[in-house]
Length: 368
Image (cartoon, rainbow, N blue to C red; front, side, top):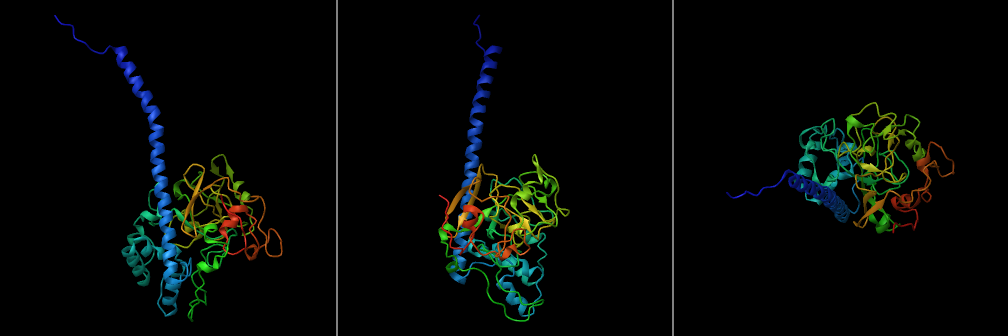
């Protein structure tokens, strides 16, 4: 009688152990490869947005406005009522230049029909070029908005979103009263105004989308600094709100998390400020408007991607020189902790990172 060959229990356990070791060795490599692919897509999105902005400027001779958009302001001045029409950010105007003409037409039509509550419908459609694949929050914002990862550069000194800033994306038109009664002047930035150099000036970066159900947790959360936050607030003041991996206090209204509305010009939705280095804590007054510290951020290890004004994209380390985070911003008279810190017009006090965010301060700093 022939003896049948088979695995012994010991041999089977050895094979299983070997397979387990191989899986353990391969899994990190697979995860690393997947994250590398996600980062490549994220970088590609930022490149596409940079090219879209340059193409927009080539046609309109100005970059798209951020708040008080000229396109809607003209309609409002002609007597058409457009709810939320003054709070549209730059990303809407980039859609036709980013292969999203049909979506742009539908959204613009909703605004001009005064149907733009921004909730549900066309405004709930996720837009691929606005989302980084590394993002972990993949749902709609609480009010039914589609979300956004990418942010417009508003400079190194906080300025209310309806006011001109030191960064690239200022309001699209001047404000002439409520309701406005006269044709408004175009106020957004042209490339010829960026005298610090296109390759040396930030255009876009990225930021983590906040999950309203976990606003207290880093890195996606946001702290509530309280009414004392202003344009002069030192970024490190926000960091004092963090204990361990949690914020001590969060905004009282959680319906408007950072990144929670792609078409809005709200600073927490679609802007970043270079007064704080990437991936440092962020905080707001107690809402999604008003003074805030809103740095660039990402889930990439060690830094963020940023688009320059020549549409090149580079990776910026969390350790980039951003000046002394405990230093308060001062005004043109050199007074710290002063209410009108936004009047400051000198060279950035926020190191290389801050210098790269301004458009015409005569700075020669660059990221190598």
